[in-house]
Image (cartoon, rainbow, N blue to C red; front, side):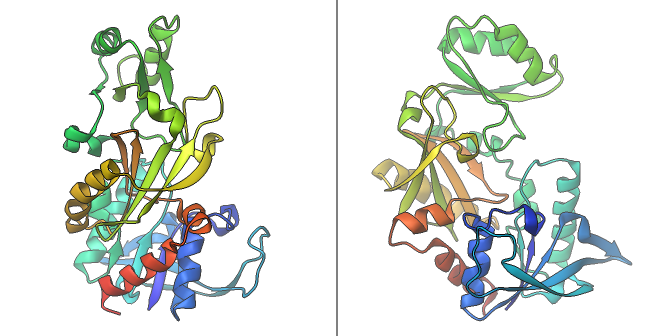
Length: 318
C-alpha cells in the first residue's frame, strides 16, 4: 500500500512517543510506502480533490529522540484517490479550517479515496459532545452557554469540571468546588460572556487513579488502557499536563463501554477511536488523532501499531 498521512509538520513530532510515527514504522515494516502532507496541502482543482504530498522514507536504526528520523523524497500533486489509504492525523483544534478539511476528505471519498477516519465521521463526532449520545455511561453532564444554568448545575453537584468543547491536552479545564470564589469569572471566561458553549460535568473523584485511554481499532478494544495519572494536586491526567501514563488491563466496566460503542462507531467510518474513561464513566470520544500507542506497547505484550496496520490492510483489502 501507499499510505498518505495528513499530519502536523514532521519536525514538530516527538517521534519517540508519537502514535502516528509508530503507525508509520509498523506500516513500513510490513512493506508499505509513505507520503505525508499538511492540512493546508489539500485543495480542489476542477472538481477533483488533490493534495501536494511529500514521499518519505524512514531511516533504519534512527534515534527517534533526534530530528533526523526520515528522508524526504519527491513532492507531487495528485488526486487523493491515488493513495491506497489516507490517514487524517492532524491534531486539534477543530477550527473552521479543520471543518473545511473534513468536507474535502468527504468529497474525495466520493471520488474513490479511502480515508481513515472518514471526513464525515470526524465532523459528526465532536470529541466532547459525542459522549452525550451514550449518557448511560457518563456522569451528570450539562452542555450550554447559559451561565445561569451553569450556576444551577454547580449548586446542585457542588464539585464540577467545566471545559471548552474544542480544547485538547487538558487546556481550559477547571474544577469548581463548592466554595469557588472565582466561579463567575471562570464561567464568564470560558463562555466568553455567554457567547460560547461549554461542558460541565460532575467531578469524578476516581481521577486520582487515572484518566484511562481505551483504544478501539475497527470496533475492537485493545486489551490494555493507559491510565494517565495526574500530578499531585492536579485535576487533569493528560500527559500534556504532566500526567504519568501507566498501562493496565481493561476492567469489566471498560469492556462494557468499549464493546457497546465500538461496533457503532466502526460502522460509522471510525477505524480508530480513543475513549477516555475515569472510574466507571465515559468522559470523551477521541476521533481526530488518538494517541497512547507507544506507551501501551512499551509496557505490555500488545503491539498497538502492528494491530492498527493489520486492520488498515484489511479495511482497504490489501
